[in-house]
Length: 241
Image (cartoon, rainbow, N blue to C red):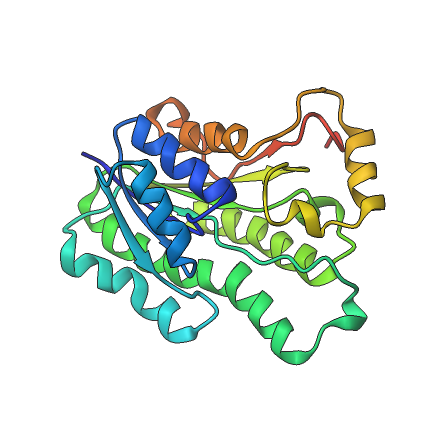
């Protein structure tokens, strides 16, 4: 049974991805700082083929130890989904130094540590593996939250660089969601920005976490075996690019 690690798995896209992976026969290692949310996820999965781990990726010690700790209990892992992220939806003028550091740590720095630690161990197996990063349309076209947009742009750059660095065995791709309903981020997006996203969309069905999860599962699967270094927009056709 292939094992997939999913960060930010307690709700939203992360939870939907965990459930979708379980439905496809993966063993899921779900990490988040929201332990109550993780327990609800595990209960929904009837505690079958799922492992939950408390992890706050704003802390350097967690970034550095998370993957090494997993390999004490698991000989090999098949995939890593870097989904954990922060969004405040406020002006760059309103950030203090602590908030800036937290945003940089969770949204980008943690991905650097988790990805390299995963790749370093799995490349030795000479077997195909997959990393999927969750970025955002904000990383491509900008954001009213400049810190968020900057870190998500960094995720795109990291995805492309790691696809080169981790080949030929480990594929690295990203999904770039647009306006995703039923998430914690949705309610923080200013009204005028939500209206702009919706105006740009060419498809009518609202984007949901499960819709994004379907694309992530595709990128984890053998069906995407020829894709690496790609950023897949899940945005109802908004901002053609």
